[in-house]
Image 1: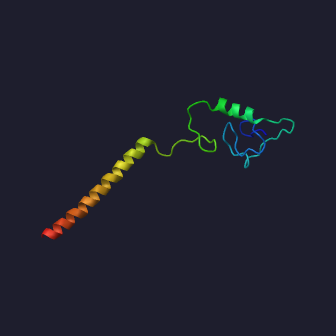
Image 2: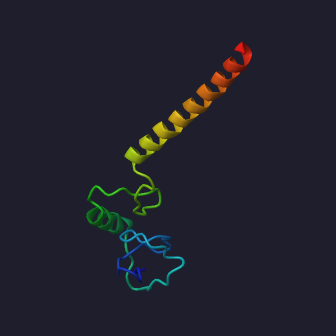
Image 3: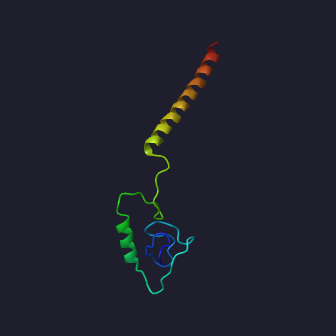
Length: 100
């Protein structure tokens, strides 16, 4: 089975192209009934085309993180600071009302 997007050979019944990650079930793939692709050949092809340090998801799809780790830390510190200010304000109002 060949991928209609990139032309890569995939094993019969594959849900995703091992090279470009496109869903083969929803895209029409070109079948070549005389060509049986072995699993070893597909795995070798996948390793050769994805040998860089790109992140790959659980199903072989390339993805980028939604929010970088630096932004996550910045957002966490900001939220924590807001919570501390709110708690300090509530405690301050409570103490003020009890002393006056």
